[in-house]
Length: 55
Image (cartoon, rainbow, N blue to C red; front, side):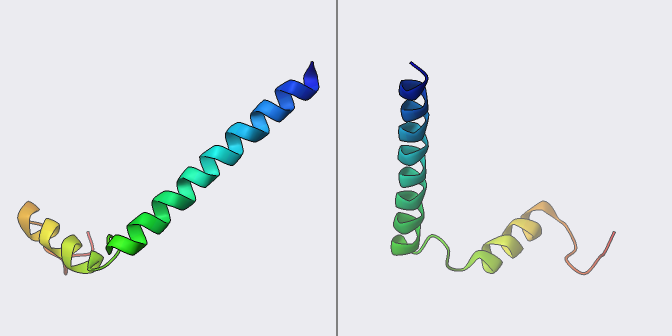
């Protein structure tokens, strides 16, 4: 009985890691990780936060 539970947990972990790898590859292939600094600065300007303040 315990072997089946261990095998099930292993299968779930394997599927979840496969999904995470697929999501990363898809994001990298579509360019989702490009221009993150530019987007960050756009959000800060829209919120009215001064980027030079360390407070």
